[in-house]
Image 1 (cartoon, one colour):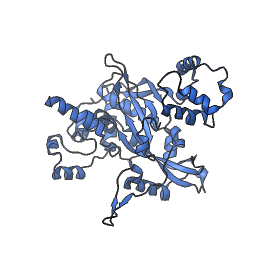
Image 2 (image 1 turned 120 degrees about the horizontal axis):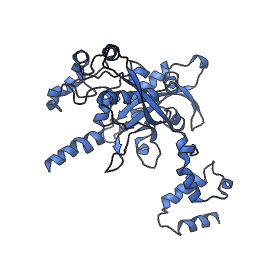
Image 3 (image 1 turned 90 degrees about the vertical axis):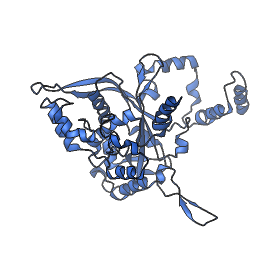
Length: 389
């Protein structure tokens, strides 16, 4: 009778009730251990939709309860050595803690993946998932053999694993006409297969935060982005980063999980903000120090050698010196004093949040991977195609 009633409902009424949606209703709702038939007594869909629409103010919606609203502060230089700099609060940061989604996902032990040819008998290394990459295995071994444990957990013998974080952000206009904008930051775990993670219905992408969209001058844009990340890389995350967090995983095994940031995907304007470099400066690449006048050598062997030899590193001492000159001595941000310190490498006088929180051993430039969607399909190729026609 139960199956008869379900199929009668599925085949009557609106034609958008596909077989896939009916399967999801059964498997994700009715068969869920959290489903309670008594909770549906007196249920009216219209009333529940109205309650969810108004829940943002009252905090009733569990989907919205994970997010909190906060303002972030950035320093505003006065330009006068006799007038101290002031802090300006930028409201409208919606965020959730990075450690919140960690307890629900993943693939724990990395491995090398090979294809064995029946014809030649040779093994060929397959590069596909991040958890089968050399970088992942190196990070896993580092945590497994050298991962710190807090003094309060001395003697802990739980397995040590990493949660590989991959981050995305993309400022976007919400309408073709008007000024409505959103700047979301997404978080995913490369412990999950990319074939599952990329499915729109997988739920593997987590909204992490919404950066305030405000019209501010250039220097303040770098300051705002890194004020947001200084806030997101909070003490809870940093404690988990250094000492791990104990999680009972879906297989019922308790493990000590260490989050590690592997990649950050963004378009070039956002990479400029994240790398704390000038947009189209003397060294426009966020990963190396190739000079702008040598960009036409792209693709040649000597170009590759130059890029490999001149990997970008963060000039922490110079940035500190530049900030002291701006905020305590009243020097101009675009003046000769700051240019002499930072212009040759296109750095800006903003303290990188990832260096500030995680430490100078973390390389924020290596995490900025090439994004084919942003940099070719919707970027370079789109501009080239428009030019050709």
